[in-house]
Length: 195
Length: 81
Image (cartoon, rainbow over all chains, first blue to last red; front, side):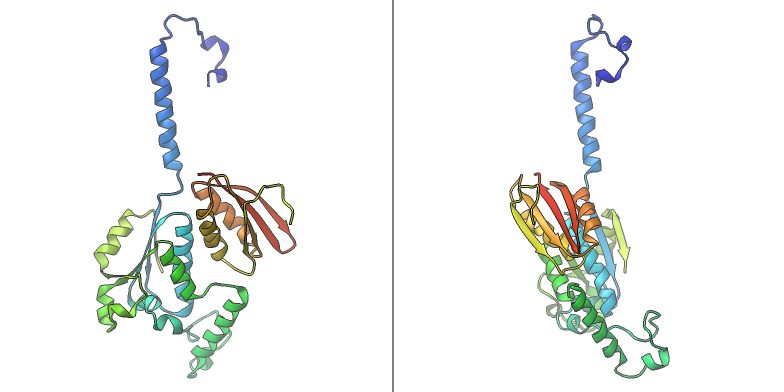
């Protein structure tokens, strides 16, 4: 540190240069360095995602981000509400559908997309692509997320609204939580997302 | 595959895509000891940026190097804490 200063500014023989003062300064520098290191610390972050959609394609982004954030050692909460509940529903999560109607990424006019059975066709096409690409399944991502300590929450109000039972959800899913819990987590988070 | 690093273990994530290479790397690192070096072999081209980003943002790991060879992307990660 002292080597950065021009020689004229440093005079080790100066009797006014107090050793105790120097020690205090060094301690202060160490203290500041460690607090800067703490600020730069990537870990210790928190993310809260609100998952409101239950279609096959919309189930992916929250789960991918949650499992990846957990790999960064972030504390992660995903609050599932309305159709988002179906992602955590053990039975329904296995049959999430892609909507062919009103989906501008589908190479089909809406009139054809609306034909009964088209959603199933679109979902099968997407599922095939996912398999071929080595993309994880929704099941796998839920297991991975829970395994890594992600808190997957199911909104109590919508559980009742949809007529679901707490036992319908994957083991490890948190129930008995509402908007206030979600807000509290969001307020404490570095990253908040609504999907 | 020869490497300049003294690797402790190799993790094969070939054929897997985002976010699996990262999640599996993290899990493998958790099972290693301080000073161990993990070799991660991926076919996901996004793993070049993702592993770098993950290593930068995660305590206790250091990315020693990345090698791109055809459609194989190999990463060397040391567990530092």
